[in-house]
Image (cartoon, rainbow over all chains, first blue to last red; front, top):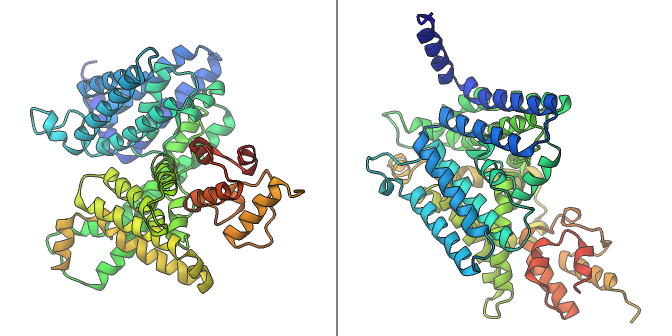
Length: 401
Length: 74
């Protein structure tokens, strides 16, 4: 008998290497969980939350480079965060200072991962999870501010942990707000209609990601930069620049379809994250349709507070009131994506783009540009600013040399 | 004096968005007016504050879902 086990094990490992399995393993686990709720008609929320947390932890362990120590530390961190900001009786000073300490900790952890570990490896694994940490940081900011404004439903540590670590959305969104999460759990459980719709979304997502995005990737500058004879200007470079937004859209929107489909296995409706951004006629419309849940959080926690502050400030002139809010918001959003200088430049360029369209909106609408012309100008702007998303500064210099 | 709050709001909206024929009701939301987005929102609120000579609470500016939510503060 023992003869069989190694081969089964290696077969499983083999499957794990395959992309499809990586995407479908969560689906399968959440499908089983959703069906279990449906069949048992279990209304014991506590038990269900426990199972869900176990599923999330197992998936994070198996499908990301995180070790059990990382996971333990992460859960410990989140629990401490939860109690330090939400326990009544602590003065607001303690609540807000512990929030700031946690955000500072998270910031150092994300941008200087090496300073935390003895080896050159960070405690929480890299790549995927570095992006995941960005999302987590934003979730914590949202949770803290809404909690302070009494906008949150009854809190519960298990809900909080599951919401933070919900596997389908942990690594790349969509970012669901805590209020939505709680209200949906009132009638959780799989139905045939949500499951079949979920599979539709997953199939569409797999097609976008594995067929479209994976093939388009080969034509992007990011892929070409890995080849030895990279650098120098050619028509191929321009083609690559124009292909990159397409690649990024299919990769990201595809991933979102899979995440939304996986949520539907549980009967959970995650927020939509993309409309048709690549058809936008200006940069404002683009950000309304691209990565919508991030744009909305940026709007509520950065853009509007800054705008209101400046609008009430007698010293700020009209130009400042129009330029500063998008510029600050997008600069911070740029840094949020990663620690490289390229992300900073990307953010600043998009902030300037938004301010420009807003500043000259009357003149622009008087121009009555035909849609195709406006679309083209916007697509050129997006493509060329996304170079900073695709390549590191050193690679861009190499390209120009 | 017979001018209702909604008439005054409508006048502000028409002027602000340069849409002379637009009809505003308490149900009007940002989705109904193309140019009413987060970039113009705060400026619009400031225009309303000036007309009614009030100061809208920050919470209301951030969370108002439609014109009806604003009326009671004006």
